Every structure is written in structure tokens, then in C-alpha cells.
Image (cartoon, rainbow, N blue to C red; front, side, top):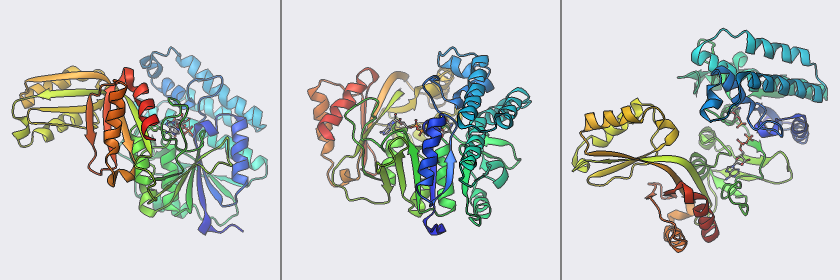
Length: 457
Ligand SMILES: Nc1ncnc2c1ncn2[C@@H]1O[C@H](COP(=O)(O)OP(=O)(O)O)[C@@H](O)[C@H]1O
Ligand SMILES: N[C@@H](CC(=O)OP(=O)(O)O)C(=O)O
């Protein structure tokens, strides 16, 4: 018998809800365990016909084609609109649910929207989750699974700061507790990724934000576990798209997953574990296409059997190298430098420093259209001798709580690269001592990753 004590929050990502076949699989998963009471769904992901996610087509529409143009993908706004409408029509047809009610509203939202700027962007971005949740709720009820749709704008999933990169407001937790009462024996279905601000305008979180919705629900409702269903058997020790011999990691700590996902393991949003970590709610990453696999379990602690558990790779990084005699002796130099990056809205990753030099690692996408002004500001305000930018760097991040006891894996990593004659651009150990970073040129990053995996994992 279901008891609220054992309640599970399940998030199904875009790959798990991309078409009717996948939606039927998730319904079987939900039916297989009556504790799966709160279900979060994403917008349809990439499928066999479309290489782009529905969310990207929506963003393309909202930005008048700029989104794909920037990626040198020539998909017009008409093509995006056609792809979105066709996707939802086909979902309804294949699942045998009333299409009129969903597709008419979708068309109305896309065609009659009078919003401008970020308001328009956030509204369009949210439509994939909004309409997919309606489709899935209708289908679940049609197959006898009593399901209640819980829309963020109705129960109050409040986001603050910015309409296109909202942060969860603490009022959200109280609103969730008030709305999700579990009085009726029904499953709650929630669209991920979006919410509303205090003025009731639609806002979205950062990309991949449905993971965040699941994390917030699990935390507010004190779930027994947060199951995150995707299209791989769990978290692999290296990106399985780069290294085919990658293996699933059975157990990880919250901290290990956070370090790995912020440095390239994009299987789980790096902020989605924060509240679960606080309340010690385990997260289980599992495969919708292979539900018998136990997946990866994320916990507060684990017994470290090995020094390293995973190696992440982050491409398209740039290093901004700044030289000035005695900068290391100038009080406030680094603070002012980081402030300048902040003013340009550029996130900074690592900053190896020395007496007369400092390098700042950034995502090179963030420098687009800004680098000349940024350089001018640094030179003017900090009176630097030289500012040089080195593009196309990859950061390899090696993570494992066992490194605290045995940091010699670092030596093995460097030796392995030396034996393959792979030079490195940067090296840095994190203060927590459970990760270190090696920067290499992007053209050797795949081979560097394979080498490190073979020698160390
Ligand atoms: N270390 C890793 N382990 C598992 N998957 C990874 C890893 N690194 C990158 N990925 C990629 O993450 C994908 C799952 O994330 P995503 O596409 O966002 O899923 P979803 O559609 O479920 O939200 C996998 O298909 C895989 O290609
Ligand atoms: N659909 C949103 C939110 C999300 O979490 O998607 P996914 O589960 O496919 O990563 C995005 O593409 O960013």
C-alpha cells in the first residue's frame, strides 16, 4: 500500500518523452511502482527525424532565427514552427488523445504572442514542457492511471532574478507543500524547467532545468528518493560518446557528481543535487530504455574503493593570460580583475596565478562580441603589460573522494600523457583535494581522455 513516507519523485528527460514509444515506456515505469507519485517531464528531445530538441526550435522562433544561425545551422523560423506543431500533432495521434485541445492552444501561443524581449523568450522556451505535460497527463488518464496535472503557474513554482535564467525562490517550497497534499490516490504530473516570477510572468531556469524542478520537488516534499530517468544506464566514468569502453559508476557522492557535471558530464544539471544533498535525499540516475538496470546512486557518502571515479571533459574553453610585473603583490588586483569579468557577464572557471602572471579560464562562447572591450577595460583599469587569449582549450577534470588519501593518481595521469607525448597547457588541484584539472589543446583532448581512462580507471 502506498504511504507518503516512501514517495518517489521521478524526472523523465527529453530523451524519455521524445515520442509515443518513449512515453509508453515511462508510463510502464510509473505503473511498476506505486510510490512513484510525483512525475516531472521535459519537452520532447531529439528524435530520429529531428536533430534538434523542441526547446531549441522554440528558442529559434523566439529569437527570429538567431539561435540556430549562431550555431551555423540554417533552420528557418518557419521550419522550426512546423517541427514543433508536427511533433505535438504526431504525439497526440500516436497516443490516441484529443489533438484539437492541445494543438489549437499551442498554435495560439506561438502565433498570437505579443510579448517582447526576455518575456517572449521565456514564454516560448516554456511551451515544450507545458504542452508535453498536457499530452502525457491526457495519455496517462486514458490508460487508467489517475493523473493530476500540476502547472507551475498554478501552484506557484516561483523564480526570481531573471526571466531566462531564474533562480528558485524559497516561497516555492511552501507552495509545493500546500498544493501536493496526496489526499486523492493520484499521480501528480509537473512540467519541468519553468515557473513564474512574482508578477506571474512565465520564467525559465537554465538549460537542462527540468532536473532542477525534480530536485526542488524532492526536497520540498521530503521524497524517499529522486529518480532521474534518462537514456543511459547511469553516470559513466567518462563520456560514453567519446570513449566506447566507458563503464557505469554504481555509487557517487553528491560532491563528486557536482564536480563532474559542472565540468562536462551533462547527464545531470550540476545544481540539481544541492537541496537533495542538504536533506540527504538519494538521487538515482536510471535508463528509461533499460529499467532493470540499477543505474547510479548518488549519496552523501560512499566507501572509496578507488582513487578516481570519473574523468570529465569540457571543450571550447579559452585562457586569458594577463601579465603585469608584481601583480601578485598588488592587493585587490585579482578582485578587480574578476569584477571586470562579472561586469561583462562572463563566468570564470579557474585562475592559476603567479608573481607576475594570472590566467583566467572562461567558456569561449562567453567572449563572443565582448573580447575587445573586455581587453580594453582590463588594460585601462589594471594597467597590465599584456593580455593574450588562447582559444580551443579542453579541461579534463579527474574526480574521486579517494584522492584525499592518495593523491599520487596525479603522477600517474601526468606520466600517461607524457608517454603518449600529449602536452598539457595547465594543471591545477582543487582545494577540496578530490579533483584536479589538466588543460590540453582541444585537438588532442579526445585522445587525452581515452589515455587517462585506460591508465587510471
Ligand atoms: N559521463 C556521462 N555519463 C552518462 N551520460 C553522459 C555522460 N557525459 C555525457 N553524457 C550524455 O548525457 C546524455 C543524457 O543527458 P540528456 O541528453 O540531457 O538527457 P535527458 O534527455 O534525459 O535530459 C547521455 O545520452 C550522454 O550522451
Ligand atoms: N527542455 C529544457 C529543459 C530540460 O531539462 O531538458 P532535458 O531534460 O531534455 O535536458 C532544455 O532543453 O533545456
